[in-house]
Image 1: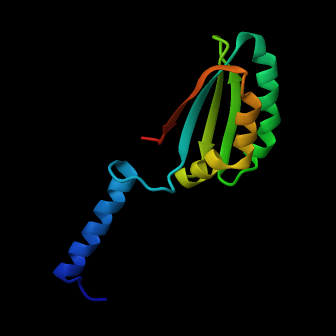
Image 2: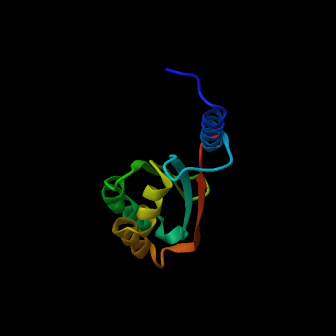
Length: 124
């Protein structure tokens, strides 16, 4: 196997730089796993009913392609925190428009006091 030409070396370096930016910052890949924290604000008189709606949606959401984690929690302030992990942004996007989460949204109508707060993050 012969030595690389200057042009081949430049191409290889460009490829490695692009790959490094995707891994350590700069450009992001649609296939990078993402973590989501969603905060729901059930009305104080609707906490049990809202919790039942969330629990009823769990099996469908957890069965979605790319769902790695979907765990709801009751916070000290009475809000619900849902910790999610998705295999990719594409999987999260599909979840966001999918039937299981639509059932959840419809079930929570009239039971919350504010819109959901959603934070999406990628590992550093």
